[in-house]
Length: 310
Image 1 (cartoon, one colour):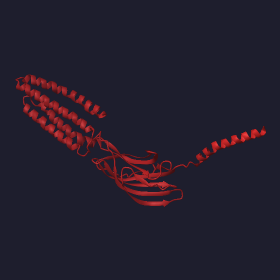
Image 2 (cartoon, one colour):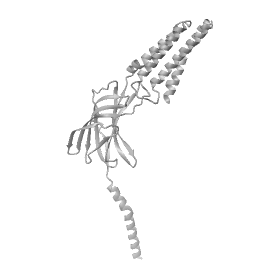
Image 3 (cartoon, rainbow, N blue to C red):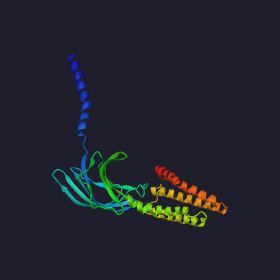
Image 4 (cartoon, rainbow, N blue to C red):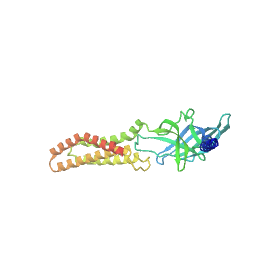
């Protein structure tokens, strides 16, 4: 009896050993990924090319690591990398490059000319996935040069952060950094909106001309409409071909509709005058002139508000 109990106990011990020991050993053999601290100092942004949706940057890039030396690649550019220094330190190794080159950046122009864009650069290690190497941003030492300026843009909001980039079958640690450029609101209003406001006001001056002088009124409407179209094309000449309406396009739709309204009022007034109904024509013009603010308000809601949600 005692022999059977001993044998049973031995079998149980062996089975428990087979079940638990491999699991414990595997857990103990799991290696933590190597952490590489990455920092960036942006010296200058030489050009933001909106037609080609690219920008050119000059910056310093450094790595602080222990065991795995990072071998990186950029995801949206092929810049030139010059080695500045490589040091073996007591607690960590240090690697620094100066990087210059152009990067592709998809821009969103829906709010043009009040648009802003985050110019981002992304990099990954070529050979080690997230189970072997992870990046950590050096937030304390990273930043931008205080004298940095971008022609035609204001600068704000430097950011550096890490994300995970998944490919079929594996995932890599991805470092992302960049800054936001935006157009000055006052400058955008003066350069883009003020001229078209003046052209529209000139067109609306036709309401101050007697309905009997319909020839002059129609001439002013047509000439200002042509000026507005030419200005619209010139204002968008610095943008790539877009498949959606910008804020400027939506405002121009309001302007074009007001011009059409003005022209239709002048033509209808002309028909009434030629029919010998000058007094009726003047009353018609007064009613249409009083309706104009309501029309502009409704058009703004439709074109600027509702079309902006599309």
